Image (cartoon, rainbow, N blue to C red; front, side, top):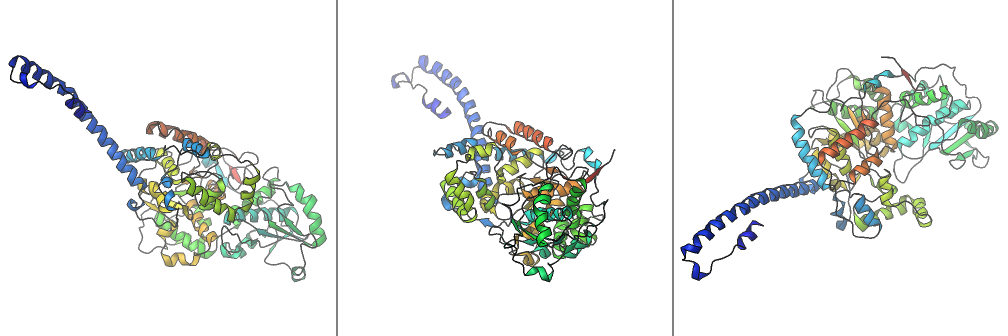
Length: 585
């Protein structure tokens, strides 16, 4: 250091101090020797300033108290794990933790600081041209699954009942699969029931979420639907007569001929079949054209939210968008007549854009993923306790089977993105700091502490809890599926939508809705998590320009427009002739 260099300069003996012959040359040499240390001192001060500023920025990113007002319900981590949970570790730390070693302190705070600098510098620059648009060839695809080419089914072979498991998204898929199977077997469908889940904790039934009469009437040209079994069949012991069909009886994504060979004989014999669970029990290919189109028609046209959800969803959308005189076809579908009049009082009316982000980082997702998120032993113990209660089968499987390590899961892209990773992706692809961001999701694991980075980089952050008053939210309290329906509306209607877990049923359904109704104006950011993980692995040495370039290239590739691949879900990817019509522009 300069101070050390000065201290090391030779001192004159006291006997020579008054000698001009020795003092003058040494004085000149000493003054010349000080020129370099002074330069080093200035350089050292500059470097020190840089590190102090970065330390300050790191602390601001990690300090929940420094964040703007954003009411997220919090799942509180244990106190010792709080420091470790502040940001996501890289694969190096995960690998070390998997071997029982002290985790490497290579955290994403460095990239977060670089992102903060980049966002500040980008305020005066234009956004990327394609940020709020899909590629031009997306406009070639138009909705047309509402067109029919057949006569109505009379449903004379018997009655099909389903009790769908999972949350609102799994249940929606089950409903449309049941509609399709009913047509295949010439059966009458009974309005579906929803099983109570100890994860979702919601007692909502079909009529609490969707308009029953609209559903029945819209599909009456396809199948016959009734609200209840005939009285003479209600007293039957369905299990005793062999009419109770569980998921173990029908393989996942079963082909239509299995239902004809295995289920139709039971239906003809007993007049009723009850499917319990019915999660993803119908394949996407091969399936006859008209049946596939019926499945699309059910999802994109027949299922309308009840008025209570539509009205509150309209409040959300207008408070995010401002008042738009010409609602989009998507808003007409989701909001019904509530989108045709201003429902706002005391809110801005100027049209604005907003980005919706689905942070699938609730404790159930984090626990089920078996991934590691930097919280040490406290995190591992907490998540293991949750798994024992909510996912006992997974807990038993871990005892008897060697499962992939946390490092392997992350490198394969099988871990949900933490908020830290999500915000880095958004900053890299060009969303400015003043972007209005809607956060969809329930209780973010880690709460405010986990959300500190994203809320500091994007302060215009809102959720349904901040946009709606307590009185407006009250009818939905303790109904997670109905709350999820509000998030679905806000995400589907957004000018841009970013998912953090492409495997999420919610994100997949939102993406499909936007693809079906968007007309090329509703882009979806869908990261390749495997490639993103490989980029983040180098976060300790990668500069922002390189990170930005690689992430943008990754996202550009996932935004390419193409026809639905074989066996891909039509709920997620409806761009196919079964669901949509292609025009030549």
